Length: 190
Image (cartoon, rainbow, N blue to C red; front, top):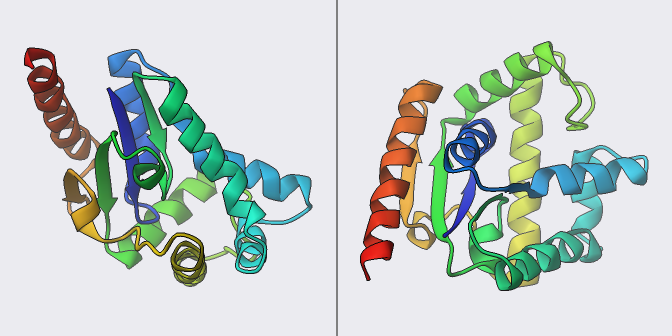
């Protein structure tokens, strides 16, 4: 089974995807890390790289082709990326959502502990993170509409949708795990 995670910034995608991969003892592929690494190689933040991508489709195409290839050649893994559900349509598609202010506060708290995300510049307050997230969402929306004619935030694309705003990480994990295990059992029976 391939499980794809998408969702809004600060919704808990990485936390839950990592934990689920450990539980299921399967690999996890994180597209955000690939994009951040590509940005860093060009001396850019992720925000600057996304802006560049509004005119240069290669910034998205390289990662997207990698996702497509993984979906063709491998099985039994978790993939985390905004467009993973689209490039691996046979995946079990999970979308985690969060209210923008809560997501920004979660990211800001995470950045205070360890800031190696190469996210953006000037993230000294959660309000700065919120503004950066809003710019990122707009850039994502523009790029994915322009290059693929898709809306990654449409819940109709996903098999499971969860608003994590009022849930802690354990509660989110338990709901996601329950859903995934129920689908795994059904798949095995057929």
